[in-house]
Length: 300
Image: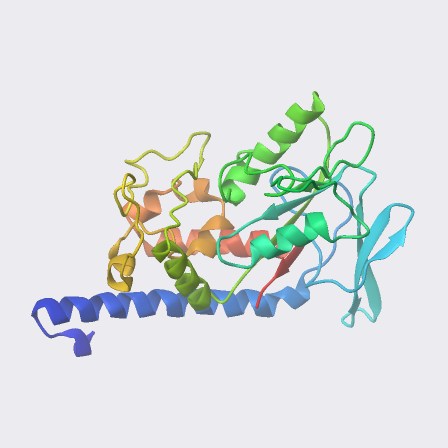
């Protein structure tokens, strides 16, 4: 911080930029650490409980269709063989997409419902949602923005979807009874610096995601839990980069780690009001563990 020892307005701006650069650098380390660890993730078979994710490998080759199964394969050189995990469309398997802002998730979700030849959904013109039912009961095989909609909240995170059992609860309600399912959690990651800048520009154009619920420990976050960086009646359109990075409650910071971790481990959003190294470490470890067990995750 010696180079930012100057006083006055310039000193304040210099210190803000230093903190901003430090955060992005730390996020980049996490990003590349996760990227390296992808290669050692192993498969597991059988049902998955609410608080864990079915494991798989880095990404996919061509679909292999056989008796209702769609196998995604990759050569596993470590064992000299080939490991396979199968999604069974006709059974109780459900793909759940965890959509992190500005990671190309919208494009991927549109592809899933509109262009998947092996897993077709019924889409109608001018309708945002498609019917991705699998059988006579019309139970969905896809839990995402363009199939079920934002039923767990706008851009619901791991805490909302899994820890608070929203996915299970919503699907049980639709089915009319409790049912055991296998959940294939899927997400996209992006270089943290690129993603942050993309979110900043998106907010400049008028996006706020103000209607997000941020449910944790069974209740939505209040204004006291999670203060806003702007007047909700006005929005944040046209915000400058300086103002954007100056708000300590800006959820753009560390978004990918936070959305993939179990926030109940750190008192929900307490880490924003009273940040600490220990809380950041807990969130990071939680996010990495969840990524190790996620069905498929992609990054740029």
